[in-house]
Image (cartoon, rainbow, N blue to C red):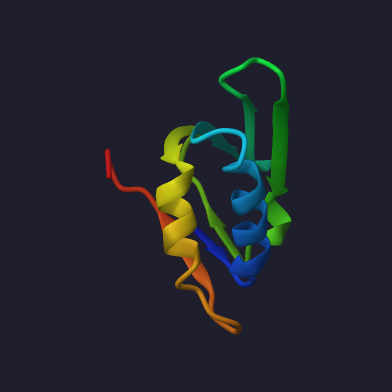
Length: 95
């Protein structure tokens, strides 16, 4: 799996907002794009989020994937993406 996003600022802002409610999520990646559904620990709020595949400049997917992601860790990585930079997400085996 290799995904390339030309504007990581958008994803950074969204992850920042979602991480206020939940800390870990399972993202589903399929031919339609990336989606997540999460409920906060108090079972008060539910988050549904989707990035369509056409938002990525590169979207190579061999099979559907479910990725467990710690949003705080992702948020710290996304803070390093400056203006004009792109973000490459890849998964090989279990890494």
